[in-house]
Image (spheres, rainbow, N blue to C red):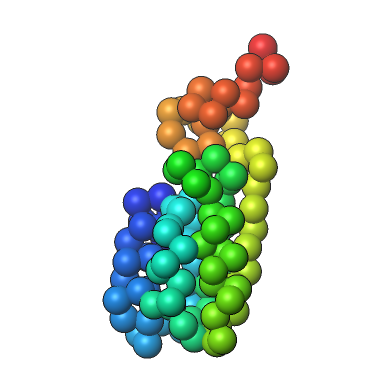
Length: 106
């Protein structure tokens, strides 16, 4: 899940981890205390350092402390823009206006 969908992925996975073979969360930081509820579950966390108020570093560090379950982390320090140029100025995730990434592009 991405963003709000990512929050849903964290919630569903933590409530019933036995139902999932793996979970991919994109741009949805979570509290590190959640890691204990995800024991044994493989996760791939993708995020920008500016996601939410805390980014994903803390939850990923906590996930790596689990006895079972792998965690893969793709961490962006600069969020990529939308792949289609016609959406360059779209407000929302990875948009230039929201994240002020296009200010140097004119």
